[in-house]
Amino acid sequence: MATKKAAGVSKNGRDSNPRYLGIKLYAGETAKVGSILVRQKGRNILAGQNVGIGKDHTLFALKDGKVEYKEKRKGNYDSSWSVKKIVSVK
Image (tube, rainbow, N blue to C red; front, side, top):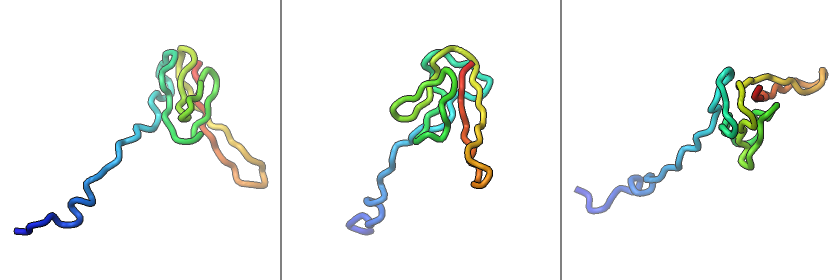
């Protein structure tokens, strides 16, 4: 039996906490005021009507209503199109 622990055992004993990112309310679901719609890093999904943006880019509802997701195409005909998702509450 070894008198010391193997080097890999003590060095690999760490892990980071999960970030819990992603869509929290999907299209068609009802949102209350202040409920979180999307948790994200960066502006992957844009805020539409009745949606606010937190300092960590979290999207939340400003009014009660149903959640809607739309796609918006950006760019010109010469360059490639980029598609952005927009979330709104109506």
